[in-house]
Image (cartoon, rainbow, N blue to C red; front, side, top):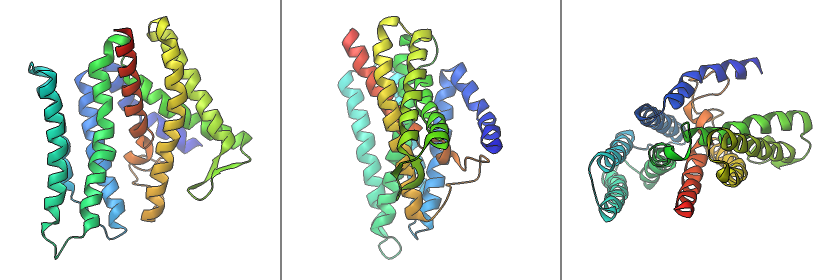
Length: 275
């Protein structure tokens, strides 16, 4: 318990970046994505699967390049769509070209590379999109909603399971998780999401925050369970040892990878509705 609290304090610098908002969030997300992909690929090496980190780095950097082109150069919506589709095509193409040295590489190497690009690089990129496109909906950074749904779920699920847990949720995937803890996690996400809406958003958007809280509590746990599946298949306990008590970057942000797209698309729906 003490280690988890200390590790939570270690995360404070990242929270400060979110508080400051703007370009710093973009930089933080890019760094987290690249570090997370490295940890992910290191896990695959335990299975003798050798994903290409250079290909993943090129792909993720290009994604952020597309983002800045879209942000600072006036373009038609069709052009923007074409750039993102072009990025997807190029990412898949690079992973397939990586397999051309057939004598040294297996299909799994290319597929693991592609998985890392989209699962970590693309999913986490939604936090950048959320900050840039929906900052006007909140008086603080909307990325807080992404973190709130993930971390509130994690904390409430942990303590709910610790004090109330009796029925196993997914014993094969994660033996310590319980149904009671899962419910508490969802309730925690709802409470803090609604509180965020009450304090920092227009009161008319509180129902949207309620929905985000419910979906966030569910999706966050799916992200956590997905990471557990990967780790069990890889035969590792943690992705890394960067953060004491929490493992690596991926161990701390696995649920954020799922809540970031969820919050972004929910806010997209809200913006369409109010327009």
